[in-house]
Image (cartoon, rainbow, N blue to C red; front, side, top):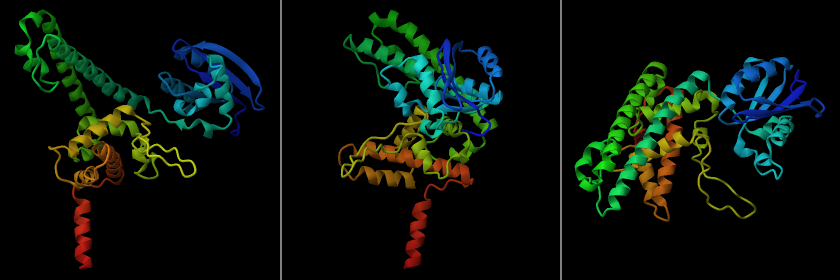
Length: 355
């Protein structure tokens, strides 16, 4: 136990109510109860308790709860829920038992794979990006709905970007479907305007609060959205001992299931921030695509794709996304300017020296 902490408390966070289980230094249950999942209830209950180690699973409520309890002087551990199979696969899983098990595991924090929540200001900035992404998903759903409806009548709408869809397809909608299509097109126009507003807010955020974003945007294919999401997800670039850890942080490294002579090739871990991982993959697809500018990343990824084999292009995209995460973190930490052909020039210089 940490010096000065006489109690460990497991908290199973629920949407309306949360369950608490407190253990003494000797591991005996000294308190179990249920409290409402709101700030006032948590502040009242934990102000009454002495300094404790409190553990909870990461989730919707864990950011504000962890900040609240830290402000009250408690040691707070937020556990990675995916690592806690002892809870998720418990045959007697319920809120009370979950809280009890969390309290037991808190006596050895290394078992919990603790995660760090961002500051309240960063969470608020992330909320802007989450709101934009929700509108983009809604736009995609409406576009697919209208395309499907028109297809079911034996027609097809022209290929175009989602941004211009509401303008480009209006004249191609069959007359019989106009009553169904017009409200959808109007809603798509409204969504597009709202998305542009969020894009402007994101650009302003990057310019005014996160100047490091400008350096990352020097990489062709990395725009304000990808660079800002990357910075907000990491928050503190010094959290990694090596820039290579950035790839693993976003789940872009291969999973492993090695045992004896058996070591199969598996997909990526998909750990960490799903949204940022998708943005990095999209940036990698652009870099490797026909519009990507010549650079070390493009040449390296293209060489991987040309090796052939099953899913070679897909593996190349993931590899470039992983390398892109490492590069972005390195530029952020070092403050160096991006040189798209650094490796090529270095090799050429080395060959000249050898000659």
